[in-house]
Length: 430
Ligand SMILES: Cc1cc2nc3c(=O)[nH]c(=O)nc-3n(C[C@H](O)[C@H](O)[C@H](O)COP(=O)(O)OP(=O)(O)OC[C@H]3O[C@@H](n4cnc5c(N)ncnc54)[C@H](O)[C@@H]3O)c2cc1C
Image (cartoon, rainbow, N blue to C red; front, side):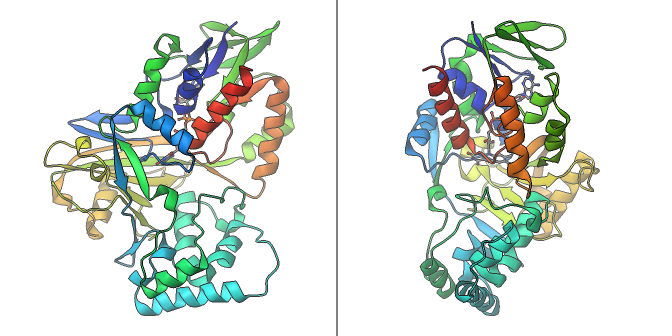
């Protein structure tokens, strides 16, 4: 009997490309999940947020590039942090000499104090980790405000389990050099990155989708998963499909809500899991050359967007000739003051704010769209590990496997999703 894969995002499609007897069930009319791209009026925007292809894992990186054939370009990161009107090299701690001298001094002083402080205690939360790793100056000027803006969560309520490999942690030497103005690079495995030449990040999806083309069932919103005899029945309320095994790549919330007899402590743990949502503001500009940045980080509270990406600096073909594409990313929580704004209000505000910060000229805007993504970032709060372990143990016991970003409920980038899919496919087909 066939294996049922729920969700045709990057993870579900990767699993499919590595399996023989399977079907992929997708609730939307199109595949791709977070890796979908909007193509309109000659622009291509990654509307689950601006994506780039990078990985520390050469094998997975090659796997991704192979899927693109020759449809990719290699780019060198030129990313900045907009800090009090100055462009500071990214990561912030590698750009200290771009700061006014007094602020540079405060950062290096705080860093040395953190190093020399006789503190043997392990940081108990993300905020403490930021202070103890980078010192007061870097933490308070940029890292805490930026992180609280993107996560929409108090950093002292976040755990440190997710940090490794995601928050760049430079060697001491680099911070000293950076303060003195000697060029250094941080977060090096992302310094060079790749991007599809045509089609946005969805090009990766299209290639994988092609491999599974006869085995994808679209517009099938899984509403129940039940055990029957020696297999599983998946239903959307109208149709039923039978499978030998179920691999869920869709959000863990939906997984739990589609199965019966879930103990109350599992629901309790589920409702304790934290995530945030994203609104992507896509702007087309009637300018050939805007800047040479890859993307910008903005920690300031006077602007909704925490990150602004310039995908036409990766590949010219994401905008019509003579025009540029810009993606502003704004996170929010269900029901908060950002969520309550209409898409139109968010677009108008974003254009005004980026204009004021001299990132764009509002008179050149010729295309606008906004899209909301309910599940954007997993937030590791202090109870995260306990809660996720409980739910995973329960689902494993029931015989439902989880692979992918919101199924595993972990901070997984594309490469990690593909690696986990590959590892899972190997294990299950042994
Ligand atoms: C803002 C942002 C920027 C990012 N940038 C990068 C980047 O630059 N580089 C990088 O490597 N990674 C990046 N990522 C991460 C990357 O997008 C994810 O790791 C990856 O897309 C996750 O794929 P997935 O298949 O696990 O999940 P999803 O993409 O969430 O796919 C899940 C699929 O399940 C389907 N589904 C949901 N419910 C049901 C149901 N009931 N029945 C059937 N189907 C269902 C959905 O429609 C979807 O197609 C970024 C993420 C975000 C949010």
